[in-house]
Amino acid sequence: MIKSAVTNQEYIWQQGEYDYPAAYGFVPNIHTYLHEDEEERPGMIVVPGGGYCMVVNVEGEPVAETFYQMGMNVVVLTYTTDITMSVPLMDQPLKDLSRAIRYVRANEKRFRIEPNRLAICGFSAGGHLCATLCTHYGDVTDCDASLNAISNRPDGVILSYPVITAGEYTHIYSIRALLGNEPSKELLDYYSLEKQAHKEMPPCFIWQTVTDDLVPIENSMLFAEACRRSGVPYAYYAFPAGGHGLSVASDRIRRGDFGEPYTFDQVNRAVEAAKNRTAINVSEARRRELMLQFFGNEDGERKEQAAPAKDEEKHAAYVPPRYEDAEQWPGLAKAWLCRIGILR
Image (cartoon, rainbow, N blue to C red):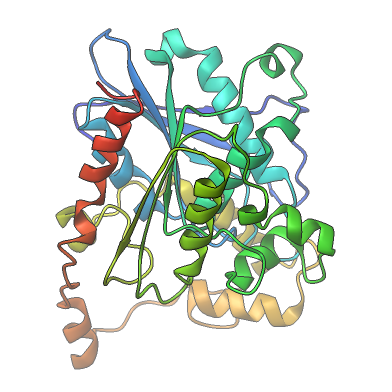
C-alpha cells in the first residue's frame, strides 16, 4: 500500500449496465491513489496486463506508486478478462477502459485531476487495450448519455511491452481470449493496431526489450512506425535486454512485493466457478488445467504445503537480474510527460 495515498475502490458500471456473461459477480472497478492535499494534479490511469486472462497486480499498485511519486493522482483499472478462455471478450475491455476515462473525467474535481492532463499506461495485453482505445476511441459509445458527452480520448498514452498486432508477431493467447478461436479477418484487422493508426491519436510513449520472450519486439516496432507514418508524436525505446513483465523494474518488484491483489477478483471468481463446474462453456480439459494451475491438483482442493525441498529453497533465494538500462523507462516517461504538457 502507498502509505501517504488516499485510496478507494469504485465500480465504474452501475447496476444493469454491465452484462459480460463470464463475470461471475465481478464488476470492473478502479482503485484510486490520491495525494492527501487538495491540489489538482495530472492524472494517470494504469492498465495492467495478463494476456486478457487476468489483471496482474505486479503492474498495478507498484506502477501506481511510481506515477504517484511523480506528483500525479493515479487510478488502477481492473477490467474484464477471461481466465477460462471460453467466452470471447470482444469489445468489453475496450468499453471498460473508455468508461473509466469518462468516469474519471466526470469526477475530476473529486479525484483532483487537472483538465486535459489525463494519461493512460498499459502493459502487455493492457498495452493492447490502451492502443486499441488510441486508435478506436471514436467507435465507443457509452450507454450513459451524460458520460457519452465526455471525451474518452486520453491526453497521452504509455505502452509498455505491448501486444499490438493480431498478425504474424502476435501473442496468440491474448488474441484468443479477446476474439475466440476463429475470429474473422475483419476482427483480426480491427485489432491489429499497426493497421489502425491515424493522425488524431494522442501522443504515444512506447518501450520494450529486444529479448522479450513472450511478446515479440516487432509489436512495439510496428506501432512506433505506424505513429511515425501517421504523424503522431511519439517516443520509442527498445532496451537491449530483459524478459517480459518487468513492470517498473524497481527494487520493490525484485523483492517480490507486488502490492495488494485486488486485481485478481474476477480470476478468483472464475476459478471457483470452474472448480464447482458452474463456469460457462469450460471444457473438462480446461478445468483440469485451471485446477492444476491454481490448486496444484485436478480436484481443486487446497493441500497443506510440505516443507520446501532443497531446490525450492534455492528458488526462494533467487534474486532477479537487474537491467539497469530498462529500469530507466519511468524517468524517460516522466520527461516525455513533461514534453507533451501533462507534467510540468
